[in-house]
Amino acid sequence: MRLPEVKAGLRTCRPSLTTQLARFFIHPIISSFAELLAKNHGLPDDRGMLFASANAARRALSFVQHRVDHEDKSRIYVLDFVHNPRLPETPISAWTPFTILLYPSHCFPFAKQFWQHTGEGVQSRRAEYCRQEYEQGALVERSVADEFLRQAKGPKRYRKAVKSLDSATSDGRGDVSPVDGLTDVDRARFLEERFGRNLNLEHADQAKLAVRRRIAGSLTKDTELHNALSLSPDLSRTREVAGFSIDDVYVYPCGMNAIYNTHRSLLLARGPKQAICYGFPYIDTLKVLEKFGPGAKFYGKGDADDLDDLERRLEGGERFLGLFCEFPGNPLLRSPDLKRIKKLADEYDFAVVVDETVGNFLNVSVLPYADVVVSSLTKVFSGDSNVMGGSAILNPDSRYYQLLKKTWQREFEDRVWPEDAIFLERNSRDYVGRIERINKNAEALCERLQAHPRSKQFHHLCNRTHSSQSHSQRRILPQSRPFPLFLRRL
Ligand SMILES: Cc1ncc(COP(=O)(O)O)c(C=O)c1O
Image (cartoon, rainbow, N blue to C red; front, top):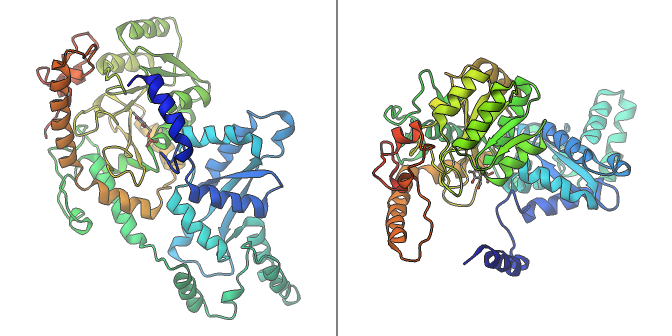
């Protein structure tokens, strides 16, 4: 089937699609909660977009305000929802606050761009949980919470007013009357029973640790979580950079969020400079580089000529923030010459960010050539299409390491919802075996297609002979094997 036919097919079936990749299509649980909040707290005709981080929502605000007409700018605003101070805090209270971006409905396309490119929006499990809390009065808009706090601190005669405020907000904007008169312990039990859910945060923390160890390459056994954390590290597969530890592995709610935050942190650390997008990348990566900060120089072919041009610019005095590339590229499987890129980066002072999603870290070893390695865990790592994830790894051997580490320590917010971490950990237990199978299947497919008389052009890694078949690729991928067997040590 050719591309126009695929596109036409997609157009026909789109009306019957109920959901899709969560960064493209806002999950119905999220959009109906946003609608409810917009109705309760916004102006008529407002729509809303939900963010787990107040900072991210404010970045979305600024992104949308820069793109709308002057008269709409002041109609875009954010509201924070926080734990109701009249209820006892539970460990999950630290996880439930969220922020809504409100805007006139015709500004939705700009909010949607931010959502899609950055992956900063909430996930559906978080939205579902927060909706329950909101409807039970455990999450209230910040001004309501401030009012509760003021009244609780004020003289007795004002405390009376609290009751009337409760009854005035029976649509979920702060009604806590069902638990009035109970002790703190009873209230906590009431809330837990009422919500019918008790998230095991300790379990979620362990799941995040196990996921980070898997990304580090030091946890490769397919085993239950409680065993996994007591195993000694698999030193044969751990990342090949001296001084590397799992403290340098950061997990994000999706791959684009890792890429967006890497670019954002580089801008904060190194100042506003143009990025280089080398090779034709996953579309949202290019959009992030183009739309945030001072933009990007795009080298779509990602071949030796492109590097020659870059070198001429650098020799001529142009300076850049960092070079972003995929290893190998998706979908043409071009592999950038990482050795030459690293040499240029060392000489002309720019960072190198490599997306290893397609190669995946069991097959390719790119950390020694990069300052940051990013990946989408949504695909092969998870393998189950019921949760998204992303990662960024800092190279402790990078000349920017201290600077980047400091920036990440300041900027990184763990926003992987506890239940999502549990799903991601469970799904990824057998990733080594799955990757082995995928490699074998792909090799068989590769041989079949290559032999087929109607195959015109065939893209796989190891039949390439051009010079961009780089040092790192040769080192990792035995030349005699076709693409799927560019295995390292499986
Ligand atoms: C190479 C590559 N990087 C990044 C991403 C974005 O990942 P996510 O969908 O988890 O945000 C994708 C998505 O397909 C991808 O193919």
